[in-house]
Image 1 (spheres, rainbow, N blue to C red):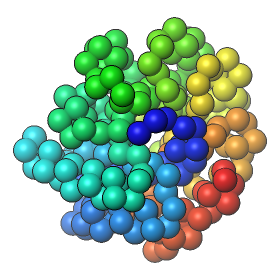
Image 2: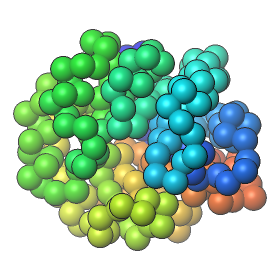
Image 3: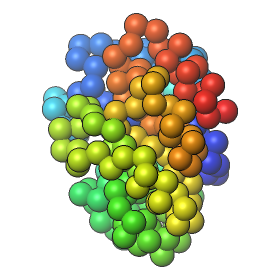
Image 4: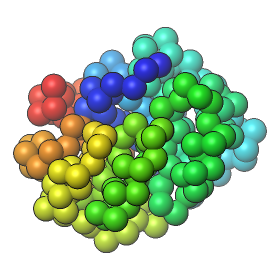
Length: 213
């Protein structure tokens, strides 16, 4: 699947550690029906899955995304991304080295890179295969125990101004701050709790699309 910036408009990120005893395929199906534009399989941290279980669940989630023509992206594991024939792989500053990901990823795979500073964004500009940057956390978040301090909107806008690729915002995103992300240059919002901690997934996703579409 060829990368387009529109894929980043409503970017759902999730793994089993985010949903307790609930069913991730069912949640993904509901989020797709609501209109998400991409899904990142991020199963790590407090996940209780072993490697084989993570792969088998990935097959189910990939097929759901493929059938819906939604981008399926794997977080922080280029080998798993290749094995699943994912559309993309996303890597953070503390994850696998981006140079290894670029070297090892399937040649038609889109690549996303997390950045939190101007310097990191400038380095990303020098890497040909980076398709987009995930900037964040913009606001305070409890979804990622290893998250760095919030970077804020002003720094994100500075990164947007120098980046050669589109930037999607992540971290502490809710219905009250979506418009501020767009106003400061983000092409979309990436979110976990906006879907996993709501009683109305359809409304939550529609709120994102109302801002970014």
